[in-house]
Structure formats: structure tokens, C-alpha cells
Image (cartoon, rainbow, N blue to C red):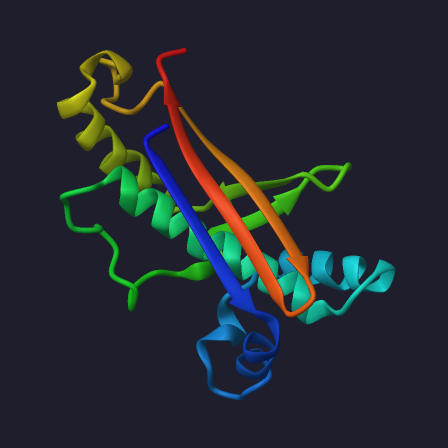
Length: 158
């Protein structure tokens, strides 16, 4: 494990921001994430709690990535980050995962490779200088007034 991030979102406050015109939340989620939240809300709860959990995953990812880069500046400022490049998806059983879209995927890969190359050279491949295997483990939940998520960055030489 090279990074760990966790986040807690108060759903009512998040919902208020989500529905306020002109806030950044209008462009935070992909259309697929919005559809998934609507499908989940049709089964239980409300769209806002499911989007709050996804927002918590995105925040947790940033924290896990930043933890992996400990001691270095994050290569993407909060102002330049395109939140839709961090997409929360789920498999057919509802287990969450992350898809990183370009250009963020390459930036993340490169930045982690630089740090790991210094700390753990055996984990970095020779041909591209990228970690052999970076996995983002995701857990998200909501209950009552809160949504939470945890993201773990794991790198192995396999």
C-alpha cells in the first residue's frame, strides 16, 4: 500500500451545493455516474446520497494519491483538476471501482512512478518507468446523514 484516503460527506449540505446553480458540482460527475445514482435511488434512498458517496470516493482518491506522493507537490492543482476524469463505476454486483481518464491517468501513473522509482526501484518497470501494477481499492457507503468512502492505492511488482 502506498496511499490511503478517506472522506466523509454530510449529505444535506452536499445536496444543497449540488442543486445550487453555478457551483462546481454541475460538472463533477459523468453522465454514467449520474445514471447509476438514479438507478440506485430508484431502489432505495435518494440520488443525492448516492452522488455524495461517489463524491466521497473522488475526494478519497485525491487523498490516497497525495499520500503516495508524500513530500512532493501534487502535479494537478485543485483548480485544474477535471473531476469527471475520476469516474466511479460498479460491477454487476455493485462493487465500486475507479476509472481514471486521460490526461489524469497518465499524470497519476507518472507521478507515482517517480516516487516509487526513488523508494522502491524494483516496483518500476524498465520499459516505461511506470509501476507494474497500480490498483485502487474502493469502498463507499452512506447511512443517515452521511456518506463516506475509503480509497487505497496499492502497487505490486506483479
